[in-house]
Length: 434
Ligand code: 9WN
Image (cartoon, rainbow, N blue to C red):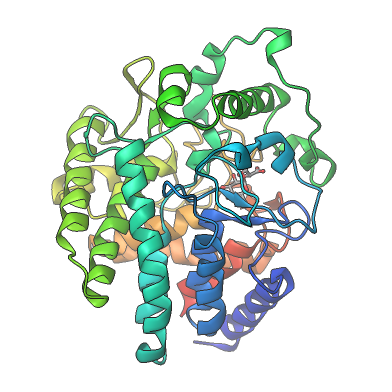
């Protein structure tokens, strides 16, 4: 590693240091003051290279706020900060009998990458014997979290967990959700009163529209009215999706959880069997033979969602496709709209640049996100596409070096957008370089 890379790693560590609160790391200094679920998992992967204590604390702080039914919340609120919408008063999550004591949280989840992160944190520990204490604390939470997803989010036992809010995908305003949000025709009196904070912190153009936020808020109100009863939500919620990214991460995390189970002397086979079931379901129900990638499935309209995002290629990260399917996926990524073969755009935009409604700056509708590149980089490497994986690694390095550790980047110019000093950009840069 040269001095350039070493300097970049030092800068990335400073970003994490800046966002460290003493208990967890803020995703971004102003826009995201609380603890976010999948951010913390990715951040712990960065720490795992140089600060075992932080890596463990990051995950345990989140896992401690797990609900009694196993739900691992998207946000753990920090009572010292009020500047985020929606705050605990809007969620009413603590009114659920399943809510944890002593923590204020939201009432939705985020993609389950935690067991994968915990495995990396454990396996990279300089002192494995000491790290066993961490694992013994983390494992029961992780197992309960996966049990929750298979029990509550997969009532038909298909092997695919559903998400019930765009926030649960981690890709809030992705074009994937357009048709469903469009279908939600809200009367004036159905839209709850709310005041956004995000648009006063970063450029309004880079954030989801108010039409999207009306629907995000409506869904939260619905969950609160139903007291977070999952059976009731399942009957009434207009947004129920079997998402490729969510289930790919669940599948991969299931394999990782099985390894952790063996480490702590528990039976790994139930985790392994569920992960295989998820892999088969992804491959059976969500594979799109015509286009050569995977598609989300809308459980309300009972049809696949024909929208092609970077996230649709995440089964590579989980080792789901066979070699033939993987080849077709790589072809798709190289064909132009995702820029993997080089050319005029930075790989890979979160949405096909030729897709309908693409925007180079608007959040999940086109910009490059470091976590997507990181998942795909690892997935491609797994299938032997070293050269393509190298291009993604170079993109991660170049974007962070030239523009700074932004939340997302314009694929045409590389310019950074959204939050500055964004933690997972820093954490995954560290992982990509070390
Ligand atoms: C809502 C924290 C989170 C990420 C998500 C990203 C964004 C929140 C928001 O920020 O979502 O969860 O307020 O926009 O979409 O992936 O976890 O970084």
